[in-house]
Amino acid sequence: MGSSTEPAALEFTAPPELVDFEGLLFDMDGTIIDSTDAVVKHWESVGQEIGVDPEVILQTSHGRRTIDMLRVLAPEKATWEYVQHMEGLLPKLHGEDAVEIPGARSLLEDLIARDAPWAIVTSGSVPLVTGWLGVLNLPAPEHLVTAESVEVGKPDPSCYVLGRERLGLGGADKQVLVLEDSPAGIRSGKDAGCKVLGVVTSHTAEQVLSAEPDWIVKDLSSVRLVRTTSSDGVTRVTLEIRDALVASQKSP
Image (tube, rainbow, N blue to C red; front, top):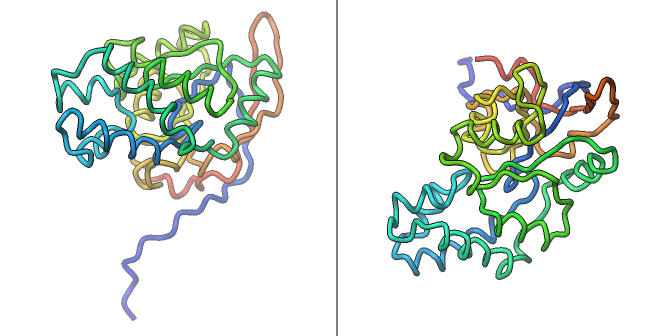
């Protein structure tokens, strides 16, 4: 009998693991919410407006700033005024087409209840992020890093570097966790000196794996806040990560 050429199925069965951090940085779309259906509908109309095939836009848009994409596909529209107007319409027109990522709401609510440091770091603009948080009635962070906050978007690490700084955790000795769904965002977080948890929502497990995050889970239902402790002005956030991709399958 010949050996099978089928790849082994990935197993999300790793035992629970407790890990400590001083702060958490969340990506937005694909990590906290899934607005795929809304984005598809919106880009179909916007693509017609700006004369660009919506399929081309959709193939290149996830995890990237809209302004960076427009600079390539429709330079005449690559202004912050246009981006903020266009993205601000998305939650208003297609709010019913977005859903929460499983586990996101409970994790954010627990972080707020226990006064744990966290922020959102996203490629979306301010009107897009605040619009989605409002439409879905999700907890809002004290600190927010958006597309307008940095000169260069993901996979450049500057957004997560800024996120660390806004939490007061810019030092290399500070332990910060990034939660991301896109390979570009995962690389951004790692290059900013953070540990990264990848979620398999918008990309395949293999695509997430290729970016080499420290943990891979299906969604945020695998992440639970266990406790927060404070000592000498430092807050420690203890998380339980369960049902992650088994370590042996993360090796080359």
